[in-house]
Length: 553
Image 1: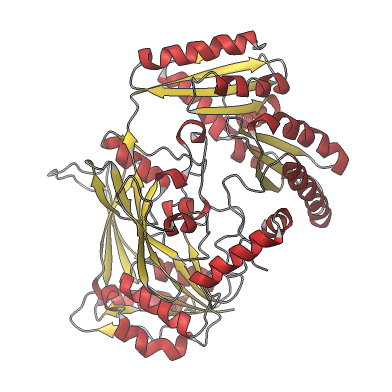
Image 2: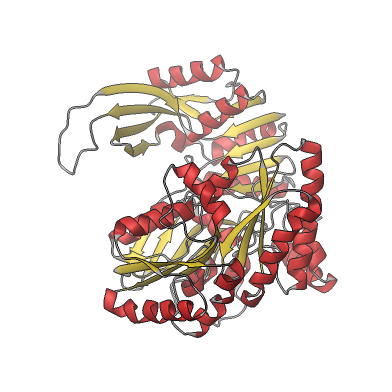
């Protein structure tokens, strides 16, 4: 494959120290190193080492750093003949301070800022010779827009990509063309404390956003399991997470979006307003569209005041059926927890082995894990006390209250490790994400338990009992690849068919992408597919933006 990378070329100047200095403080450093870097150059080098034919397009200064960068690219086989060497402009520099397993970075764009429209005009004829062009956001944003317009005019497919943590192939380029990497478009632009909103670029990581707003006494509720996912990816899949029971999903927290359309035009949908009945909600069409309708460049998100206190209940039951049967009773009690999770002993054992630490309780094969939050213990005490009594009346063996930070961390760390723990227990696996009505969770879980015998393949499950979103993992173990794929396909077909019978849907929070497209099409009536096709044509008449995804053939 022939690949072109249009992007940044930096020298990383890295200083290590005992810790990162405080404001106004001077520290003695341990070491200083100069390392070839830049998001674009790093991508070019990595792809060349993987065996691709790669050319780097960009700018460097006529200085020692620029010469070192060109030498490094050439040494690994990356073509550099169209890199411009500029007089009077320094090569881009990233100044990195590393200490205490953390870092701070200041990027001085230098020559990267000269990768502009004029430069692109000079390389257009070269770009069309390549199977795929890769872009990032360490070059001017207007350059990226300009290349998008060029793609539209020339019917070149464009695939948006964030951190690449998705599980359904949403950011995999099915056709050759342009891939736009938004991971370095990662700036927090504005915290509006009066309107309780924050405006960010799409490459901001979920964990970075959560930490930032908490430092300012605010709370961003969506809580998908993958904390290293980008906000743009969360919006594109309408990610949910464990706190959806009380707080809802990503869609409930998106107030406004800035979007680049397939033709390169920039539009704004929504804003900071709380209410909006001004015509069609184009903003909401973008949420969950998986990059097929537009490329998100900015998002304004709703925040809440930060709850001051959280308490969790770990509740063992004799059977999983008894545990899950209790969930509708909890919901009806009006004492709505932040999260309601179910788990089984077999998955807990995997987590114990993975973490090297025992789970706080071992008396049962089935558990509910509930969290309550509020501004004080007194505020939430009545809720969790009501739920505790309800669970005991419904057959719970005990109610364990995690009212210390240590206990809280121990339980939720185990829950957070489930995915990696299951992955570590087998040779390979694939995930089935589906959602059913709350009152059908038990029936779905029981079906999954029986299915592994029917298809003769191991299946492990856990999930969000409070919102009906189940995660099942089909494990390869010692099966051959051919046999694994055969049995996995049979299992998935049966799982999605059963979910549909129960009134469920083929995805609760991971999206459809490329991998789940056949199951979505099977679950939709022709009229719905026709409507989706019409929406796609309205936004993207040339079908160049992330083609062959979601419902498209």
